[in-house]
Length: 348
Image (spheres, rainbow, N blue to C red):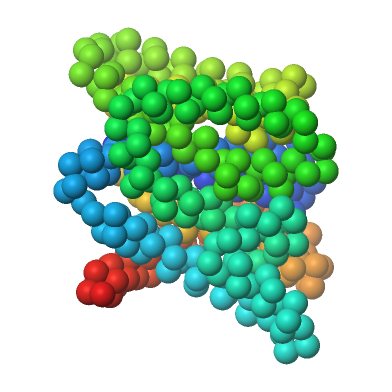
């Protein structure tokens, strides 16, 4: 377990949270907050890194079967996904008797995480909208056991990424503005290179972790990685079209942050190893899936009861409620459900 990377999950989940706070107040419609969608790219690259870290060698050496891997991933993502999907459908009355046909047309693809393959907003954002990213992860997980063998030699993986580095920006440049979100932001095939970047990053980590780094040098590298990421983040709106910022623009700065912090040798790594930040990273999946619920619920209540509450109170309150529910979800639903699904599926 790499504690620093677990803790970083919390910070990037907060960026996604900030990107969605515009539903509460237009103050959050500025670039500083809205660019928080980069958190999704972070999670995809991190996923490639961590899955390779945990399973690459085990699959190559046949210490873990494809079935065992897939069962573990299903147990990880599906219980909470199904719970939140049903919650949204019921609370939002999206499966009301007057519109069963229309509701089911969107519900079935969302249930099986196929909705992001349909490049239409009324599909990929119809129910619990953050779940589109789980559809991407599902594709990555399905393919990974084959990729682990195919890219057992890193040269093939490097070659595949070089092709992606050329082809992806070219195709992006040919996509009209109206379609970039459906084709390049939520499309699992378009986000697949992000996962490959993470897989290659693991190979770089394998080489780097045996190198000696002093505490001072490692601390400088950590600060430098953060500064480079922030530089990319802050200048992006004026210099880079949004279609590139959806993925390939951030490959380098995110990879740099992940690589440097995965070594866990500097001052910032010590801070990130704090147990409470690690717990924050553990609950980030719950936080990610339910935060938009809470934001929309607050907006609905504010409109219904004509609330006029300062942002300095409302946003911390929404955040605190989301954290509280995420903790409950993680300890009393996710972990027990994970064990239960593994036990059931491994008996088959």
